[in-house]
Amino acid sequence: MREYNLLEKLVQVSPGMEIWWDSSPVIFSNWCQRLLTKAGDGDRDTLEGQFGRMLNCEKPDASLFRGVTTNPSLSLQAIKDDEPYWQEVTRELIGKNPGIDKESLFWVLYKEVVRRGSEMFLPLFEKTNYRQGYLSGQVDPRSSFDRDAMLRQALEIAAINPNVMVKIPGTKEGYEVIEILTAQGIATNNTASFILPQLMDCARSVQRGLETARKNKVDLSRWRSVITHMEARFGDLGGLRKFGEEKGIALSESDVRLAELAIFKKAYRLLKEGQYSSKLLSCSLRLGPTVDGVLRIWHLEEKAGANIVVTCPPAFIDEIINFPKQENITFEKDRIDHEIPKDVLDRLLKIPYFERAYEEDGYSRDEYNSHPSLVKTVEGFSKATDEMIEFVGKCLGKS
Image (tube, rainbow, N blue to C red; front, side, top):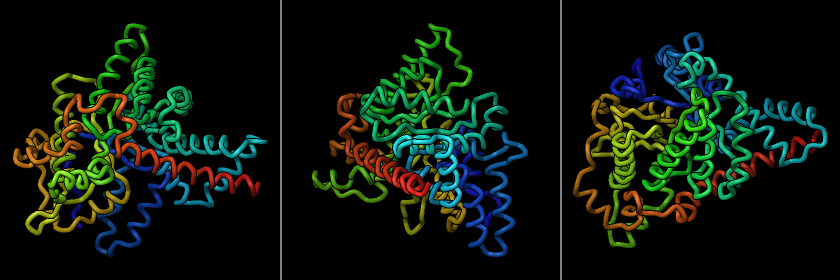
């Protein structure tokens, strides 16, 4: 095992890049212990050094992790990581809220998970003068198409801690909420976004919100905006290969990864050229493809040099730490600016599913809510929410 992992090397050649932890930080210690347990004797000291650099409690501003993304699925994982602990927390919440119903208890517990996680990153938030150390707390995914409900939930989430960033889905109603929150100086993370029209719609919505905030002299010292591109959810979950087959075009794993990267790179260029205030956030990353018998990580390699956020779940970080033949992976400092091969792009543009996703005006705002990737993502997040409600229901029944 090498002393410095590939994420550390990526940051070294990418000024402004931030690595975020894509899970609740409350599970970080247990995750470290599990990796140490399965590591070979010769790797444990190296691993402990990497863990200490990932989250440096003594020097928060020296930590590799500069922020956190969470959602209902990740909060559910945090609960499952230590159910007895969270059962006790839930019982305490029941005691403080006599007569509380199951739905209300879920929301109180969810906000408690957000609160405990965000407190772990408050030192970094304060050390960086409120620029980093944010934790994203997501509105209830079941409310993804309900503007007023999302706005009400967003204000509650934002009030949990000063470093809590509100995560809003890329629905028609979501962009209305993002503009309103921005106008109030509330930090936002646009999630469930997969296509260029969504990414640019968010950037413009944020700009309009900022104009309103400045006109009203709103304090923006604790404001940030990130726009999430859920990459593999566009290519895999959304069914790019299937849409290619409908046009008689067979897509390889390389083609799918390049399709996702083409959208991201174009958005990165447009945000930079337009001097937008939002920062792109890359998530839903995958290893691959395998090229000439060598496993690559194009989702990381092709972003080298980018001033972006890259958020990584524990399982992906485990894969990166233990990546085979790391010497095959090199990070070029300006790779983000390299174009996707023209022959690949020309072939992809023959597939309407990709063609529309790659054009700024490929979708109207009214069409976002029916995009396959968004529909399936919201369904998955909602299912995790239902499981959290089931968990608190059991706790409520035992109280």
